[in-house]
Length: 112
Length: 118
View (tube, chains in turn green, cyan):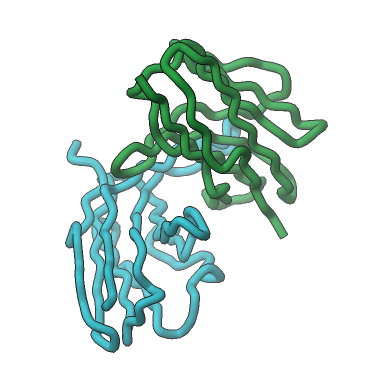
C-alpha cells in the first residue's frame, strides 16, 4: 500500500531558528514528490521534486529529494512567525491519473 | 481567476441529516478531487474525477458517501445519513491535464467546508 510518513508531527521553534521537516514514502512507480503549506485554510503549493539531489529553493525555503532512500526534506532558515503552518508532503505515482497520496503533515509553530 | 469555489464554508447539522457539499473547479482543469481532513488522519483522498468520470473512489468511507460530477464546472459530495464521526474539513481541489513528460500535477485547493455533525 502506498504511504507517506512525515516527521516530526509537530515542532515549536523561535524566530530565527532553522528547521528541517522530513518526509519518507513508499509508492509504486514513483513519479514526483510535492510539498504544500497549509495555514488557516487550503493547502498551497510549494515545490515539486522529481530528481534526486537537485535542490529546489524559494527564498528561505528549500527542499531536496533522495529517491534511493525514499525521502525528502524541507528546510526553512531564519524562521518567521508567518512560517507557522502545517507542511504537507505528497507523492505521485506513474500513471495516467493525477492522484496524490498525502502525509499527515508537520505542524510548525514559530514563536516570536 | 476565482480559484476553486466551495460551498457552504461551514455546515452544522444533526446526526441523520443529509449533507451536500458543492465545488466549482478552476475553469479548464480536467481533474477534480475530494479530500477530508481531520487531526487524527490528516488529508485523505475520498474520490477523484478525470474529465467528469470517477476514476478512484476507494477512499470513500462507506455507502453513506456519494459524489457526482454532472459537468466540467460542478461537483457534489453527499453524505446521507450523516454521523458525528463525519465531522471534518472537506476540501475540493482541481488540477490541469497531466503533462506526460513532466508529470506536472499541482493541485489547487478550495477553501474547504467545515462540517460539524452533532
